[in-house]
Image (cartoon, rainbow, N blue to C red; front, side, top):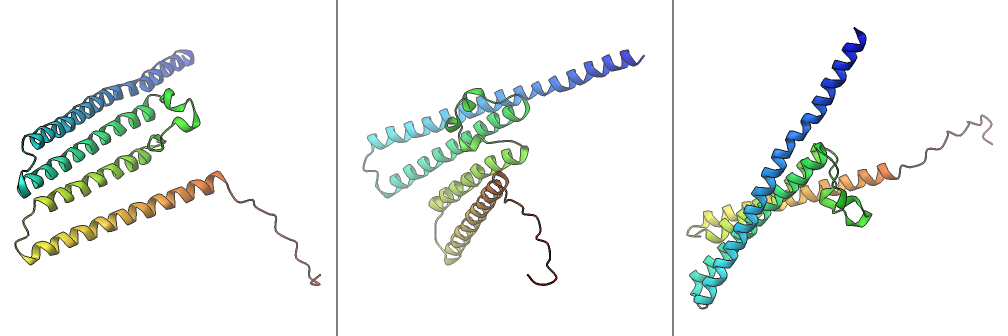
Length: 199
């Protein structure tokens, strides 16, 4: 009975471990979505380029529309990057290490140093922050500043962006210090015996 139970337990654990391969669906879906977003960004740039050569002196409104289109393409590329990082990150977490990135020490990019879900969330969160900044910039270009309150909203938005970037930088610096301390721990010395005579 014990042998049968052990065999069933081994078979179930093997099945449970291999069920992680279902993550491949998320990896493939994210990769396809990333490619589509990259293609969309290229199409936006191509259309903007064609429009520029057809109307090179489009005036102030034409230049503003071109700036908005290019900002939108940057936003698209950043979102495609999020999808790409997510696909590679969950593949490494649940399936296997990406061998080409690990063949040489210098060939592995920093953003692919993902060892846990927290690392993946951190890498994706940084790019999402950049997307929000680009969106704010795009909204600032589109916005019509007809009243003083509009300038106040813009100033508050810039202030919040600066605070977010500062917190991100502080968190990254703290994380780097913790990793350095973990990699090179300080040697611990045994306590010195106390001399009651003061010698």
